[in-house]
Length: 126
Image (cartoon, rainbow, N blue to C red):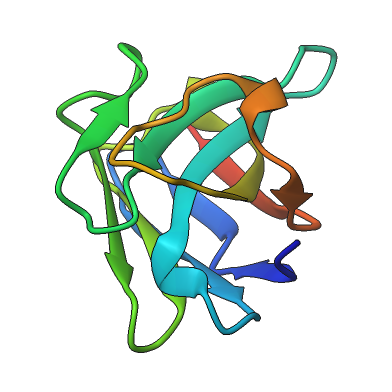
């Protein structure tokens, strides 16, 4: 399993932008499929975005498509979530997730992942 550490969360006004980072340990990061999930207070954790190990494919929740972008730098063992046009409903704790991936595939279910970060809080004020 990978060790994951998220950073970059904070307080931002509606319409603003943030970039979340997730630094991973492990020698085989380049074979990990990565994902971002979020959990708002009182709600279940939900899928946000996913990326294949080669960054050849990405997938997004309908609620963030066109506003968020996931990317990765395998040399730095880091995955990013670029968040633009933020809305108050984007307020949540954001989690990074990883799993080894034998083929190019984006995983969108929480149960597909076996490594999780501790989460970073994103708060969007209206």
